[in-house]
Every structure is written in structure tokens, then in C-alpha cells.
Image 1 (cartoon, rainbow, N blue to C red):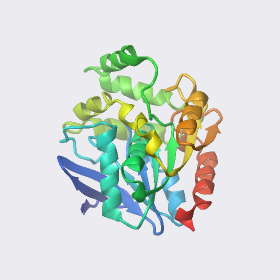
Image 2: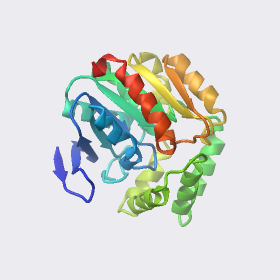
Image 3: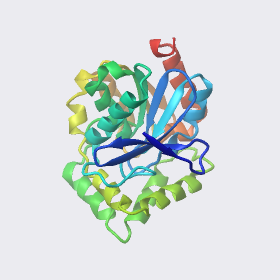
Image 4: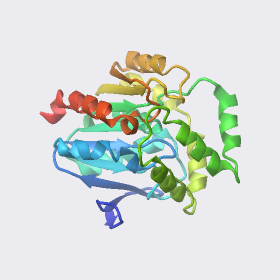
Length: 278
């Protein structure tokens, strides 16, 4: 593990992995929580939740996906399994017993895979707007996405789509956060890595849902545009794990950023009732 100082409040640390490094930061003391962002996003997507977790007595790591943010874009693989393996490696690096994994979107799929792969390292899961199976639409939807991301309009198309994922109350700093995402995508190799990430299949995660033993909370915005029926998707996942479900009225794909005053207490209540925060 190496680290370097940035303009952020906490130093950026790096986890060495085959093919490159994964960036993360670490704050607080107590039971470990690892936060995993979604495709095309940054670890700062947890800028509202992470400080509350630290204040509640947790040690919180927020990580960037491969080819995102401060992580390297030198890897051969950028799918759910690769991200999940990075999560398992980070848990082994940080130690401190079984941890809580909080994953958003594709990060939720990586968290679920990690829980199946290393059950002794995972005490609980919080899956926010989770992709743990391939969405309906199949090859046609995947082809449309790939066409939309072709240069020269790809970065603009992604930024526009990202803004649509906040149909409720967008964070006041959303414009600044989108600017940070655009800056990340301009780094050498990062656009290529992002496009490779969009090709991931969630089938390997769905195949292992039955192996997940960690208690789970699903947080879903009931206006999430990434799902034809967000409530039905939450019910499907809850039936496979099983898990408790919190539906956030009016929220989209990032309810933890749209309505932190609703989502943060729900997550803290879920974690506070478990053995991980005894």
C-alpha cells in the first residue's frame, strides 16, 4: 500500500493489484465500512454518507473503481468480478475483521460478488440502486449504450445521462461533481477504461446471489431511471438474498446523495442493529 497527498481532506492511498493500483481514502476508527461507487462515478459520490459513518464510530474506506478517479487505467479487466476482487483485496489489506460493504449501482454488484467470494470478510451489505443482474433490453440496449459513448460525443452523452439520474432533489454541488467526473475521464486511458466497464455483464453476480450469507439492506429510489420498475427490482433482489428494502420516494439512482437525510439514518439504523457495530 502506498499513499500520496492530494487536495482532498484525507490522503489518497493506493492498493497494489495485478495490473495497476486502486485508489482509496480512509477515515475514522471503529468497525470497517468500505464504500464502492458505480460505473462512471467517483469515490466522492459518498461525500455525504461517509462523514456521517465516521461520526457514528466507523472506520470508512471509499474506493475508486478501476480506470476511475485516482485509480489506474492499466488493467486488462473492468467488470464486476474484477471490481469485486479488488474489494476482497482491500478488505484483506485493511483487516479489522468482517466489514460492511456499501455499493452503488455496479459497485453493489461488486459488493455482492465479494460477499459470496469471501464470506468471512463481510458482515453486512448495503446495496444502493443495485445492478446484480443484467437489465431487461438485452443486446439492443447494450448496443445503443455503446453507440452513444462513441467519440466525439461520448463524454457529453454520459454527462447528460448522469444528470438525468437525479430526478428528485439534486445535490447543490452536482455541477462540481460532474466536472470532477469529466476531469477523471480526460486522464490518459480513463475513457477507454470507462467504455470497457460499460461492457460488463452482471450475470456472474446473479449466479452467486445464493452464496451471499451477509445480512443485506437494499436502498432504491422509486424513480430510478436505470430500472423499468425499481420497486420490482428491489423485490427480486430481496427474494434472492433475502434482504430488507428501503424505497426512497422521488429519488433516482443516487438516493444517498439526493436525500441523505432519509438514507443515512436508514443505513445507520440497519448497521447499528447488527453485530458489526456491537
